[in-house]
Image (tube, rainbow, N blue to C red; front, side, top):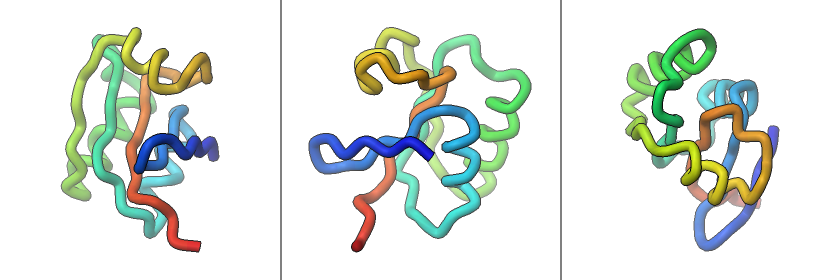
Length: 85
């Protein structure tokens, strides 16, 4: 699972990482999905997120590139609440 601590929220990106996050006890504030990404595992992630009441927002791929600073996001980024250590 890829985590980046930036500003005041943690960021998780990549299809498998976000799917694992949805199965964990961490609170997800919102999920960003690249425009045109709705098939396959992204579709399953969107469905699971909506079942859990998580906001899903479609954005341009360039925004995801900027958020992940060159990381391999696979068209999906999740914002979580900070992890309590």
